[in-house]
Image (cartoon, rainbow, N blue to C red; front, top):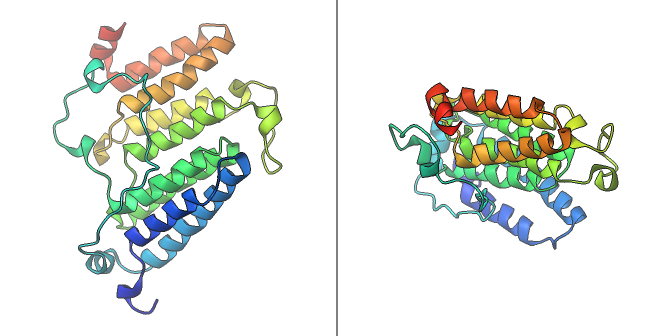
Length: 254
């Protein structure tokens, strides 16, 4: 691509990702293949789009029509509404802002990796989150992470939590010790707690946890508490909620 005008825009790659997702039937191998192809497509887009300056790219992609993907994170039917949570009232529309087209590309690929229900899927999902952070620091602000990106990483942990590890781990996976996901470190409660605390520290970037963030985190911790048989996980949940909600709102819950 010798000219900026000929660099494929987000809409084209979004169509490719949709076609990739629809071209495979359901099944474990099909999901893995779809995720691998999506990873290659996004890597290709980054190599083409981000080798030019952010200002040049913005000029080249002005007035681009965006096609919304069907792979965005969906809220669980059991998730509490924002009104049911003792959350602060947003001071701006940042928390509910529509993702940029560039962010949607990352969301689509991260969702496919999260849906593989594998350790490598979790690792790749987090790798894309770190890539978004790196691109934002390099001046590509529309490629930066948002709450959806963090939620997709939490979803990857949740999906792995529900997987029967011994019977389903693929040939390329690292086999954990034991049958219980709680023995996976850092892919159990330690992982979701780490990601949730990192998300909670992004207020300066205009990123805040939402109801889905808490739902995904607490789902993993609750399942682990059930298997643990002690109050250790419950105590960790209390400390986590105290940090995320603040003392006043935490007291309302308890």
